[in-house]
Amino acid sequence: MGSSPPPVLQGQDLSFSVGQRVIFDGINIETYKNELVSIIGPSGVGKSTLLRVLGMFVRPTRGRVLLHGEEVTRPTPRIALVHQSIATFPWMTALDNVKLALQGRGLSKEEMEERARRALEVVGLSGFERFYPKEMSGGMRQRVAIARALAGDPYVLLMDEPFVHLDELTAERLRREIYDILFSEGSTLESVVLVSHNLNEVVELSDRVYAMRGSPARIVGELTIELERPRNQYNPIFSEYVSELYSMLSIGE
Image (cartoon, rainbow, N blue to C red):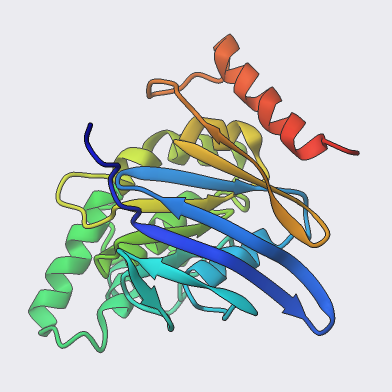
C-alpha cells in the first residue's frame, strides 16, 4: 500500500487574536498538489485573516505554516495573494502591472518582459499588453491581477473573494475558465486556497472545502467535492453539495 502524497501547504494549530479577543483558534488546514481548497464561513469569522496567515502576511498568535514541509516565517514569492479589490495601478499598462511582481528578482528587462507576457497569455490577455486599466473591463483587470500573481511562479495562490466586485456575467465567465488558467500546463502552481461567501462558486471550483464558524472560530466541517469538470449548477448532485455546505454553516443556529 502506497503512502499518501505530502501536503503542499499546511497550517498547524493556527490561532489569531486581536487584543483579548480570539478570532480563530486551533485551525488545521492543508492542501495537496493540483488541489483547489476553499474556506467558507459567516462574515467576520476570520476567513480573510486566516488566508493572510497562511501566506505569513499576518503572523498568527500561535501555530505555524509549512510549505513543502519547511516552516514559513515571512512572506515569500512562493505564496501569492489575489485580493478581492481589483488591484491594478491605473497609470501602468497591463504589462507593467504584471512586471511589478518580478522586480527585485534579479531578472533582466528582457526576462521580466517575457515572463509578464507569458502570464498575460495564460489568463487570455494576449494583445492587451499596452492597455491601461481604464481601457479594460473589471474582468480583464482581475485577470491582470491574477497574471501578476502567477508571473512570480508561486507554488500556492491565495484568493480572497476574487470575483466579488465583478458583475455576475463577468464573474461566471471567469469562474468557468479560472481552474484551467490556474493549473495550466507549465505552471509552477500546485495549490490554490479560495475564500468565498458564494456556495455555488465554491462547489463549482473546489476539490475540497473547509467550513469555519463559532467564536472563536474553528473548523467545523470538511467536504470533498467529487464532480467532474466542467460543473453544472443545475445538476442535482451540485445542489446537494451546496445544501451540505449550507448545513455545515447553519449547525447550532
